[in-house]
Length: 106
Length: 170
Image 1 (cartoon, rainbow over the protein chains, first blue to last red):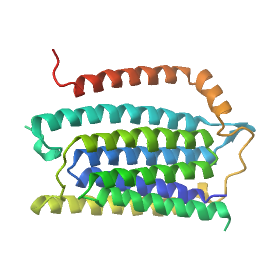
Image 2 (image 1 turned 90 degrees about the vertical axis):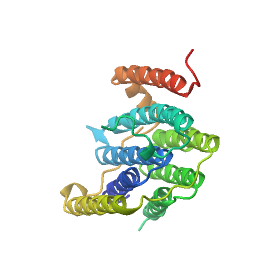
Image 3 (image 1 turned 45 degrees about the horizontal axis):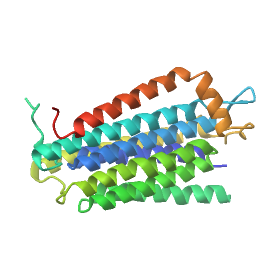
């Protein structure tokens, strides 16, 4: 049986790597990939906790896995829209550097 | 240590190393995207070890397949110059970010080490856990509203992506 605390720890580590990627990188593509990484870390936590509470009165409980499916749907639509924004931005600015996009900056 | 545990540590190490490789690689965005594939597939393998079979299959098909291919497609479409970590004062601010993030992570790990939840290993899974039958039945009975909402979300995303990526709206 897997050590469940290490599964959740792996999820926390991956989430931290994703946050640091969003915070430190300036390339919008890598920022989107880091967001994907964070969503994946959350998915891992969902599946891990679902494995800990895997049944109610002998019947399989898989609510955590349902939530993972929903997160995958949200991630897919987020990537589609995010990459659409990225293409529009590259067309207007010739760059994917987020620091060059400051139209809304006060 | 069972074979399952050893496999878990192998895939966990692979996932962390490739995630770090994705974030730290500033020269080549294609290599970053390929590192992301390794992370996704490792996580898929860990889902298999956690007996979530349908989620593992979807992870590899949707994340490792569709989403990363979309990323690679866009990277190839654009002609990107190399990225650098920011200079000067910004570097200072972002180092503070990194230190704070790692400190919070260590805090979480220490708090988790003391949690009685993880003291006992989880019991064996019941019949049908994580299979497509169980997930499908629950998805289309208890969570049918969620499925409808997901379909609306995907429709909105398709329309949004089309409008954003269009060259000019006539």
